[in-house]
Image 1 (cartoon, rainbow, N blue to C red):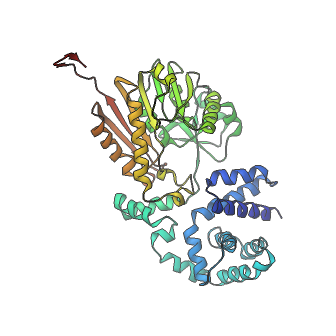
Image 2: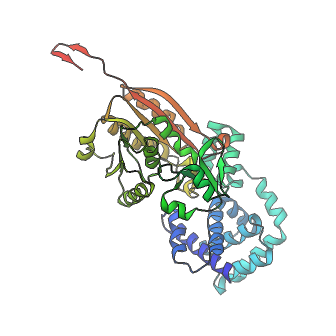
Image 3: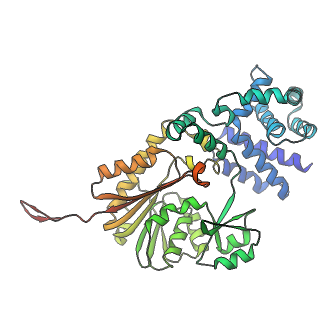
Length: 429
């Protein structure tokens, strides 16, 4: 029963995610590494796992329509899987019910079987009741997030954004010109679809494993390059990539610089540093030098300080990731209303720390994959107010409902030359 194995894998992953504070991607990856199932069943397990997480509120509403009494967590997990198959995947009822009931211990099978069969009979009624509920139920997003998006974007764009977040994300690959020419890579993958407005990107149906291993391409959304483009890094310059892991932007900067100059690529987490090193080597970014550093600490690393000042600095800041909810499915369930202000404080610490390393006349680009004003426009305005030597040159953003790619924001700031002024104790700068 191959599909049964996929269902077991998805159920085990959902329970672990519910019980432990771990990221969904890490949870399901761990299970798939050890699961003895074929490629099609792995895909089915992924569909079930992420599909349930995308639709938690809606699935729980359907459960409440079928049973007013309390439903214990382990039973609820199985019901979520069953209802996702019945109502959203449109799996044949006999298969969805039978295989889902088989996941449960014998003492729980009767109630699960009864509820799923009732759901099958009352499908039209139950779905109609859900369609009449508010947007946060229909699209399974936290209500506070819906309300803030409606305030910022309006009702229609917010609904489009929520629907966007619930779609399986396409796979985009950036052609790494440090390793291969674009026509050659497209010839190797004739089924890929080049993107009209992003000539060095292509959409692929599945991961091009061989090309990834060789470093011929790198999986990333076109929106991720906005900050790098605003930075305008030039061959021969010294660049600081302050929050570099996993390394896609570092590799792209090296490409833009024709692998001439220096990039200091930093991150604070040891595991992410290792991933950063591997990706930089794979992409052939020879000018990149990896340094572990935490910008929220009290001191700048002597190694970084000895290389400063930098011509340009990219701060691709840690953020709430609200622009990439489609790709990071459980982000919506991790956020709280207080996170946006807390994240801004961390982002300000990073900006303050890196500014002293930027040469006069140099450029710093601040970027996020967030949609929130606190982390984007408001942070930049606060930066300009608190760090008087900067001036804003440009801002760019990507909005899923407007641009068709992940959400992102970037601002280009220039450090002005300090005017020389006369002081009572002499000439100072």
